[in-house]
Image (cartoon, rainbow, N blue to C red; front, side, top):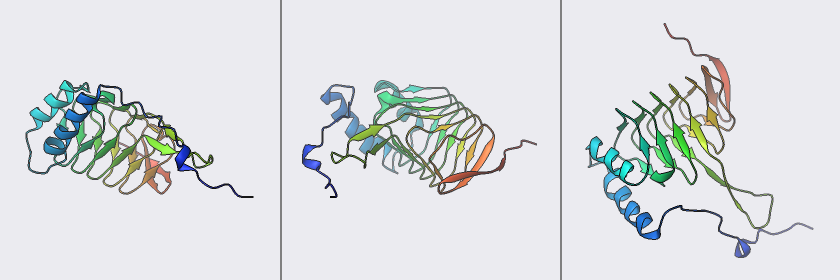
Length: 183
């Protein structure tokens, strides 16, 4: 006999981690400052991220139309670059290292659901993007993945497992295609 999904018994397991007023304020800042394409002032974006609890290094660039779920669960290293239309869906911690580049339309996904139980429980896993990593345009980094030092996830690829240092990964799921070599 097959079991049916029972969303009625779903138990909320997400911990927002801040008072509801702070979360509500962030919601509007995110909509009117970050997710819009008409607000280009990078220094003010960095200011708001820090104000709401993010750790943001020197020289960080945040392009227009970026969606950040919870800044208090975000660490961005020096000289990192967050491209247009990036979605940092950080229901838990996301670490972005120094000089990392998250290209246009990339998606950092920290949550998923356990489809093997009828209650469809929420499962959260941190993402770590180490120093010098490049996440290509429209690429997806799945929950629990560590993109190790200077690895590359190419355009529209999906990282479901850790990326080795200096490895270049492509496809869905992403597989290593070659080594990254600097000249």
